[in-house]
Length: 347
Image (cartoon, rainbow, N blue to C red):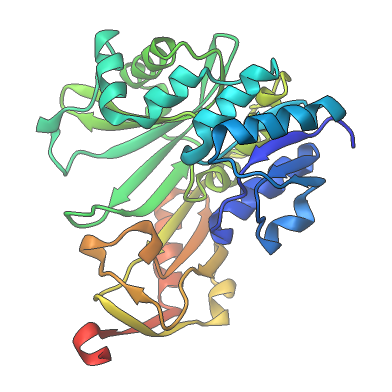
């Protein structure tokens, strides 16, 4: 096997995780560290190491033994659950990666806010209110050079859950040239001592300027890497693989479009009795994909109190402008039908 990368955990949600695995595997052989890889992941793999990434010490020992027989080039994860383990393993093998302390700080919102505030990074302002726009800077860091590859604008649902309803990426987003947002991103990267990696830096846009809400020091979820690739041509998954192996990624934009994803949440709490997607959805102009993410018979929670696990479906559209993307999303939504029996009725 030629110089593979180790991926800690494939993920368990095919609709979201398969894209990243496919893109990484297109660039370099992937050995998955996972005790039970899902069937959909197997075609992308060059090998498997049957170890539980959640058992940090035991997994590290298994990986070191594996690395003694194979020339491992890098360690990756796109799971917050395994970020610290990936950092420790990369360090043990002398490979590029986060420090365990940085990975742990990013996983602890209170510790992260304290660390950033101590280094004059503008952190989230409770006075901004729930209506403040939420965005994220999809950032690539290489040896001190900080590049914002894309801006993701997120539309949130109703309180108290305020789950994402939609993400949108536009190659010509004006925030790419906002010096205050750029300053917040630069300060965040320097405060965390990061020298290479792909980051998802969340921010609120307040009347006092952009304020950092969180840092994901690995590839973001919700198919955001797909949106960035469709809108700009920049492949964040392959960039992450390159950085993990000590190589220089190509982050040159090759497209100037817009891409968006929308999620459907239950309208009521109860048993999902019917969920259907018309095949005509694929014929809508701008349609990229539309996927059901729930099974009939499942118990689901209505949108105000929902989690990402309650989502019924997702759909992705691409177009030349954000407004055209949003029009496409609305047209595609008409092809989804669902019926939920409230618990009292279901019983």
